[in-house]
Length: 491
Length: 96
Figure 1 (tube, chains in turn red, green):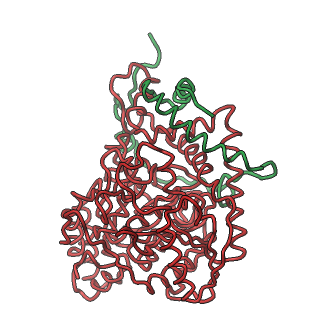
Figure 2 (cartoon, one colour; figure 1 turned 120 degrees about the vertical axis):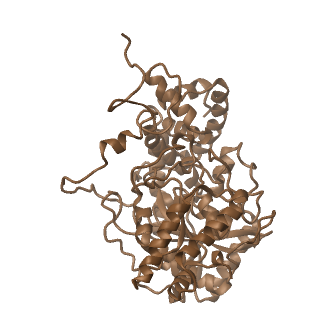
Figure 3 (cartoon, chains in turn yellow, purple; figure 1 turned 120 degrees about the horizontal axis):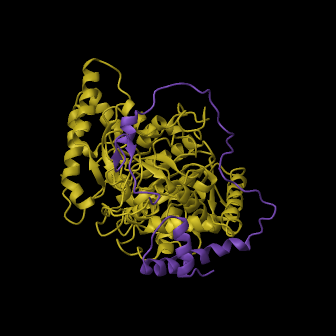
């Protein structure tokens, strides 16, 4: 077994048994990146020196006989929309191409304090707006299962880094599915925590009432360790909740006998790829065999989640992105003759087409005369969507659905049709609108491409979702790393 | 609801974006399609529904005002694209 194939708990054990050093673990992953990233293009920045320094610090700690945190010496990748002191944070945008933040996001701080080794920053759809990483201003990340296909998005770089063995754990952000959908496309675990469980301080804001940071991992157990490390109140984020009622001491292998599982008929309706539905139905049978009680339920406002999301998220984005004016930081256009021109030229040249599209959509939805018809209406429908979940969780413990209507699509297939690109997140929007947690994990393959199973739970039910996912994972034991096609070496 | 290129231009001005003629037409078409899709929300009766702005109803969060270190002026100013001494430089705002 190669070092890059190991998961976090295996590396943790290996470090303690002195099978290898933290430096060797970091080097193995940096070499893996060197060998594969020409093809995969997951990373915007690789921080080799910092990574080796962090690994050496873990080795030094071990030689002093100190206890190791489960994340100590674990190589992690960070989506490039989370601030890192002294390391470029680009949001894969020309606007922030050379932005070096003077402070570090709380989530990155927490990982570093646990001893995790940050390998670098990963590619995303510009400002996290997209479902394929094709909106990155720099390059498109490729799916390790098929280099002709997208990895999903917006956290595509982080998903690929973990799926391809470049990193063991990675951070993503999820506003409408940006962790779960790429996790599904890349065959790994991705968790979108309850809104407010994880600090957003230092995450470049997209839609502040929906954004949440969460982990990618190849196993449920690794995802659970990472999530526990990330969670917690942060005085620097006024929306982060104090004393979140999540009991991290519960065992993952509790089992799911008697767990009430709801299957919402609206998530198995038209527009879903039949092979994906079949794969998810088979997964649901596994839950039944493990002793869960399955029942069909209804979330009647499901089809309204997409339009509601695409009013609320762009409205918040248009306000959040107003700060990029070419004056104090970020990209500044040449040749402006006055202040107003400086701002509009910098924004027009600094933002890519999808970001501009969403800024305009949001500006329109908030503008005088249209506010009530669009933004006001969407906020009310958001209440109805939230109510659907409240009603459902009075009958069931968790809800199962596909994570995405399809498997990974071809690069270029949807770039000219925004609405068809938006459909890629059809199954994930409602969760963000309701603020509840959800995770995606692999439940099989269709023509060699991974299918994602989505588990949704009520607010702060992360442990229950992880336990259910763990029970499934341990039963089906699907492969965790892709066999590379397209000439990628399994070095 | 169809947006005209002129309406797109108006929105772009509000958002401080400069669009080429070509972009105005492309965005008019694309945004019209998206706005058309939004119309399905009108089929829902929401007269007696109150709006949700945040999924978890957090109350206003206050804390004691404390003096503590923050970023230095030098750290912050070094991010600006153009400086004039200790100030951020921009093109002339007023004639004269």
